[in-house]
Length: 188
Ligand SMILES: [Ca+2]
Image (cartoon, helix red, strand yellow):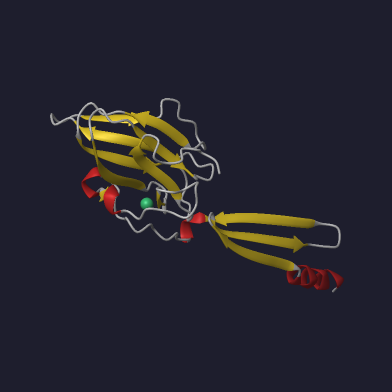
């Protein structure tokens, strides 16, 4: 009888806390089997949660690229003045934007506010002969924001790709703008 009472007692002492954050639903259960033994379980259930997609979806490939010129320009804070923002809402999400660049002009290419994710920014160009050229920061580091300069030798349409890392509901900031016209500091 004492054992049964103890079992019922221990069942009653199972506390479950459910948190929803950017990583999904976290279930934190603490079971007190008796006064001395405490066991804890943490379970992350990313798959069953959904993060709202950015307003430029779907732009997962070059043929669906969203016009950079029509994205919302951020303002009101010197860190993000002139930047655009978007997010990676599911694992494997790839965001493409297209932009017209001028030969001989140097551009700042920046990606920041990536929350430590392995996220990167690339530029693409169709060479017109069935091949593509891709540019990126020469020393990409996972989790680090990026800034590099790019001077196209040919005017025309280029594609901005932002991809990589885990989904995150908060937005990254990115920009491809003429050199010196935006704040290229990678940290606030
Ligand atoms: Ca997206």
